[in-house]
Length: 219
Image 1 (cartoon, rainbow, N blue to C red):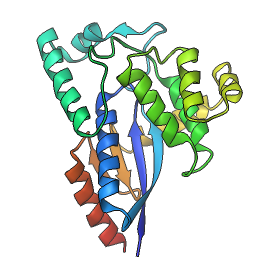
Image 2 (image 1 turned 60 degrees about the horizontal axis):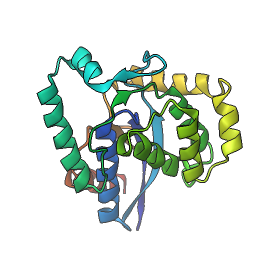
Image 3 (image 1 turned 45 degrees about the vertical axis):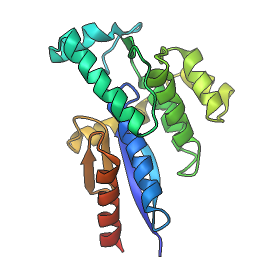
């Protein structure tokens, strides 16, 4: 008998560990299939909601936010690169370059999610991560966002209309506030069946073990 789990993947495309976590979750889901399947929903979280247009240099940003040195940042970037390689994600060799506001990306992901769990939200999330984390593109640019929309097989004209308006702004902020009230302070935060939380870009085996245990309890 197959057990289907609801998984809410709370994340931001500005977070490299979210790419690692998603890759690890994908690997775990392959290992537990066909006994366990998932309804995957991507939920919004902004690491830098006050980031102004044009963004900020990544080294400057990390130093201001965490007090890290250039050497520490390079070491962390290499760790992330290695973890990404383990789960099949290739990060941009020189890092992201700049940090950008991601609210428009979250609005588009919300729109894509309205098509349901079998819809294109997953494809759009992957395309956005590839654009930002994989190619260091400017994800506040409508051109970059619309290219991701096209890659995901979504309606580019409708997406452009959304970007040129404030459509889904209230909805995205409401969901963000919901998870903040629930205590989510960092991402990725993977919530299974509305009650089991896995935090961070964990290895595949950690996700696999959790999925099997939760599915057994649900069954």
